[in-house]
Image (cartoon, rainbow, N blue to C red; front, side, top):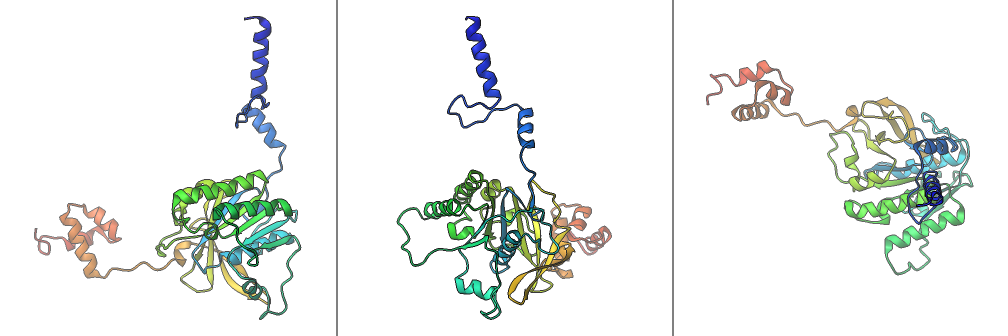
Length: 342
């Protein structure tokens, strides 16, 4: 092989390493150093809603029905478009981006009620806050329901040059999101839109029936295994059993921010309506355990019966004591020869 051909091959390889387009490959090949250099030219992502949602992220907010997902979604949207942080929470983004809330939950009249005083004295939202709903006067086109919704979301993003998008909620776009194999493609489509148009995207979703006595985890998100893989961050709203108006916010997945709001440090809020705006009002940080439904306490007879059963199975006194949060001496006394004949 001639030196000319060898030099040409080397030059072609170097172009590939520097990210030059040399084929129809979907991959962008660069050195690790070049990746760092390219990243240094990009702006540092800012906080849209404290550590819960960072600029450029695809985030999921999930909770049970009626807990306040839509309320918080509107409150966050209002905060971003006005450029004012929600008291008690950080917001470092300085621009006032064009934001679209795709509201598949509330009717116009329901929305009016939440942001007015008995349908009068309406709250004035910023012009950059667009509320988008299904036009019931138009015939819904034939075809795949999910694809039609996704296509129209994309066209709205383009037409109105949206930079921030909130979808309320995922269940409307596809009713069987609890089935992981169906939820994955839907979330992937939304993430693709976010990447294509450099959006910050917040998706609201439901949690299926869960045990209210245990802390929230990623497993409480409907269709969690697939949905959680396609988002950058996820947080939830829990309902406090201390007071019907108390709610808490907890991070369950974090990629670009600090994991500040964990089980031991949830953001405790109360639901209030101040004049013509219904919202979350931050109170303090707290331990999630304090706000969970109390665990059922077994009476002494039930505990004694279970201790005896476990002893017969050959479990150690230490293991039994740990299981029931009792002293080892108590286990020994309850399973002595006099009271516990084998």
